[in-house]
Structure formats: C-alpha cells, structure tokens
Length: 218
Image (cartoon, rainbow, N blue to C red):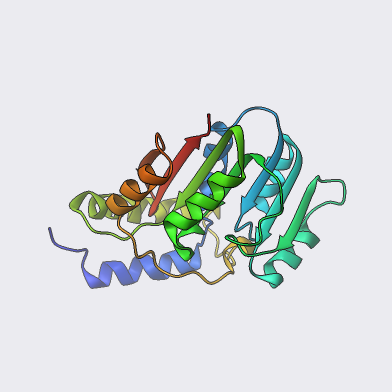
C-alpha cells in the first residue's frame, strides 16, 4: 500500500494550517453520550482550556479540571463564568488528583503523555463505584487498518476544517495551543494493557487519529 504522494501531503498540511479545528473537541458530544444525564462529581484530566470541563458542569454538581500547565489552567479559569461549578488546578495526573472519588472521569489526548498502565490504575482508584471512565487517546500507526483510517481521515479532516471555518482562514483554536508529542504505543498494545488494568473496557479506533476507551466500574 503506497503512501499519499508527498505533494498531496504538503498541500493538505498547508490547507489544514489555514483552516485548523479542534480534533479533541470533535469528540466532546460523543463523550457526553457515554455519561448519565446527571451525576454528582466529575474529574477532567488534562483539562486544557476547560471546554470539556464546562460541558460536564452542565450535568454535575462539581467538576475538577487538572492540568500540569499553569498557563493553560490560568486561561481556563479566565474563560469560565464565576457561577460554573468547576475548579481548575495545576496538578500532576498521577500524583496530584484532588482527594476523593468521582462519578465521571474523562481524559482527552493526555494519556499518551503518561505511563499508560499506571495512569489507568490511578484513574480506576479515583473512580466511584458505578462510575464511568472515558478516554480519548492517540495511538501509533502500525497496521494496515491504522493506515486506512488515516488515509480516510485526511480529506475528511480538510473538509471539516473548511466547513467549521466557513471557508475562511482561521486562527488556531485556544484549546490547541498546548504542546503535544506523538503517541508511542500501538492500538493493539493499548487494548492489551487496558484489558489487563480495566477488565471489560471497550476500545475502538476512531477517525482523526484517535481511539476511545469506555469503562464502567461495578
């Protein structure tokens, strides 16, 4: 299977830079569909500028958003209306989670920065009985299936950016200003380690270079 020609890739990269959009926010509504209509407490790990945490606050009595970047946490605080039941804290995802258990834990495009199994173990320890963990993550391209999804996503990515920006040149979204690094785990390795740490977890490959994990604690 031949890769896309270099000139095509360069053209797509230039187009996407002109019409950027938030691939993680694309999954926010999907995340909400995995959750109850109401719950008491939620934790958003790697909360960034706070978009998902604010959405969770519409269903929760209390939301904690944590991120290791103090600049993005300050930005999230400034962007959040005072009456919103969200607290943003600079904290490490493995050692700094605010004490207590949570009915909902979300983690979007963050877990590939962490030791995977250790992170899932920490998340499980903070999830209340009956609670739901939802992860949207990145995996390393390895198989023909991974490559086919990437090929399918490339023109859709460009079309989505064009539609979301109504054909106009757009600035990079605030939620995308944080630095990220490529994923180093393949999807098959992620599935294997996730099932060891969270028996019964549901994992799926997704478009736009993402996978999802959903686990309910009994």
